[in-house]
Image (tube, rainbow, N blue to C red; front, top):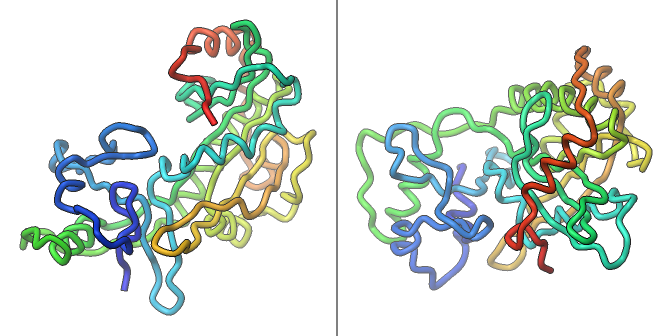
Length: 279
């Protein structure tokens, strides 16, 4: 049976949790604000589900919210080696949502000296999309722990949309990888190990092997493992390829182009005390 693993960034296995207050406040500890995952039919209500289980014989822990990858800021530390122009003494900033050809990039990890951008790495977060609805499962959990009423109109279950998530991810990546490759910079796709395993089975991924610094696109695959009453994000594999490698996987062709000075200007305009990475 499928069930909720984490609700509003709190493990459902934890004891002594005031679930009623959490359901009212709807917080996201990773963003330090109210959860952004709203219900389409009721925009004032958030779903709050970070991760779930899926599968009957061997249930898998599945991340369904991209913000779940922000735990401890580990994904940013795991990209430090790709800042090849970074030097001791430089500040590190993480800047969200910068537009480039092909769409926006979720985060940039930026090395800054004296207020000037010296180097950067683009970081994309990819959780798994669901089919159906998680809402009834969420409501049933809250009903079980705090006797929250269950709407009789809420029914159904959820599945994992492996194929569409994979295809959409690769298409969007290819639009962005050429931009980064032309700039001589790195782009990192942060995803779950379960999703990368699916891509390897269903797409032409034989050439995507152990990570090389000279490659533009890097895949950082994380597991969501049991940790006593909680769940912990752990880096499992690092692999990489280039623009041709993504094209080989998908057979796409595109030619986005953006001057380095434009991206540097965009990043510098976003620098502030709020973007400063604090360890």
